[in-house]
Image (cartoon, rainbow, N blue to C red; front, side, top):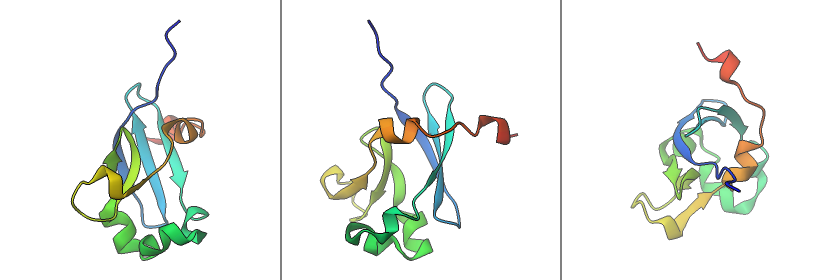
Length: 94
């Protein structure tokens, strides 16, 4: 049986610490990172400019590239299954 493994293909960070996340099957979700920002590991991203600048796709999922060197070992990434389980916002995108 082939189970779908969600793969992020694009992310768009927004001014409210949310990220629109686009998957390879066409699903789009809104990831709210405001709770994540309370964790110490997210401290460098509490500035909205840093949050948006570092937001990217790495390891096939939503990530923040903390080093700026595209080093997958020094990024914060979110489990793609966790992100994929969020409610689709496709109907809100024109």
